[in-house]
Length: 304
Image (cartoon, rainbow, N blue to C red; front, side, top):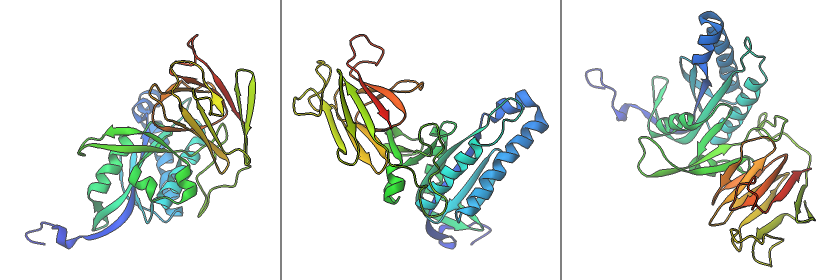
């Protein structure tokens, strides 16, 4: 150190997982509840985030208003903590008439440590992931997903390649899925995912029913006659998509030109193109057209 300036040489470099968790909608809390009740509500959420961090071998580096920054020894520890944070915050009672959620972003990589603080590109990238997340969502990077063990890696959804502020080029961004269907399925207590019952998937198309499970773990869909489910509409590709069973969950991967429209229960319909989504509950798949389009050829699915 010279003249009070900290140089890179005085800092220790380590590989850590950096996590930012931000209370979403805090401005609305202050407007609708008033200053003191809103402050108490935010502090209740932050207390959950802090205690959960410690349970998963993490350390809170700093609190910034309605946000915490924490570090963990591994991507797996951060992922399990993030899932537990979301589940616990979702279970909190309403504050007044308002529900509170958190947005979480995380990234694992080299950081510089000095005086209890951490610095570096991994910190900046984790902060950007938190900015991309919505309330109740955990967003991370491809590099972090690659560092996860198999069970946790399977509980992710490829969102897209996105331009991230401060980064050259695009990053592939993933969502870490922390709940399944209506029931919260946390990404683990310490060391493992919660055990869940094995499930099948029922597909219905054109009056034909196909059941997926241990005996049939992969189904191909498209215009080619060799597919398990043949989609005859011209907007479908010869091999349009694939459904795969991974442990007790089912994932749909779009392989097409026009994309697949996916509607799950009452959720807003989304277009999946050259990416993957976990199928949950009941829903509809349509090939090149929205599921509400009169021209759409629908495949109905139900996780049993």
